[in-house]
Length: 412
Image (cartoon, rainbow, N blue to C red; front, side):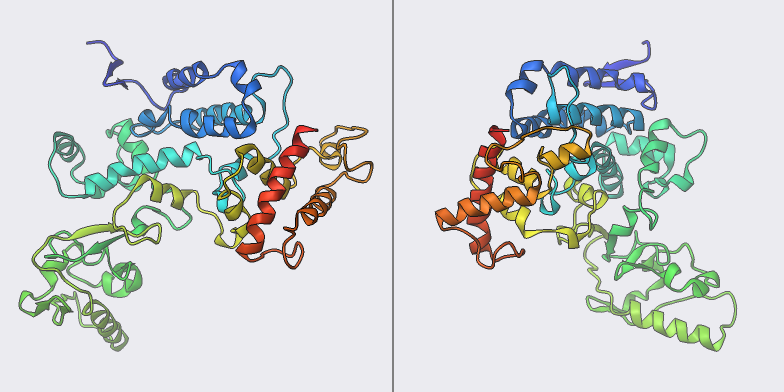
């Protein structure tokens, strides 16, 4: 059998680090696009096209292979062209930075997935499934080749390891703190047969060798599991009161104090002796205890929670025409084609908005006119434009702004 070949829709024997390997995916994306879609679909329609079709097409390949940066950039360019003006000969203006577009809607983005973070979150599922107890031919193959799931680390790869294994191991080092996946996994003690005493996170999300490095350096049980160090007779569901900690030498006074602190810390950890040790995921702050692609993506595509705004939350929850919501979103970001914004991009126009005359060249002027209209309808927010406002005043105001803004946008 010649290599490469296809099996169940996946190319076997190819090199995913080469750009040519991904030509099939890029061509498939391009085949789903046509000029009429870009010309006839509104910005809201093109946004739905990207979310439901363009992002989903490479999902199967992304769940098996790590794509090169050049492929990510190529797909991003296609997505950006679709969003801001696909099907036109002239080049359109990208009004919002693509990183901002891919950010969550709560902080002013459109919620379009960043394909690089999406690819990493999908591949991280392999380590999660491999770390769980179970049976399967794929697990036996990986065990025979790479020993166990703990070796799925970039620092433990060797020259004879496969390209796929090396790429999967590298994705976990995308955090300033180190391994973003391991930092958000914790162990729940069962019988203590799988959890390493010094190296695993089983005490309030902490690694004992990092919290007590001096004790780790003089320990004789650096590779032992928790079940080997705890006295079985003293284990209850509330914790273990006695530990067999072997040391290489006599300890100093301050080392004895550290030992007492450590014993007090680990003695309060709960056990479930009638079950096996279990790895749980605590990455997204929700007590689901299982890794999902959604939770992994939220960790990788993290944003400052202080940037969250009630305006965008209310805006995208309104039951109005999607075009109106998108136009209001651009207005709040000051990304409408006003004379001021066009001038910053080297474009000069005489009159831009039919209702604003010569002074209506900025976002504030548009908001001023819309506020005057909303006063006529009796839904002007209490306290003026001093955000954040209460939901009762904010929701109807943003709804009216969205509808009026869409009307303004049509007349541009």
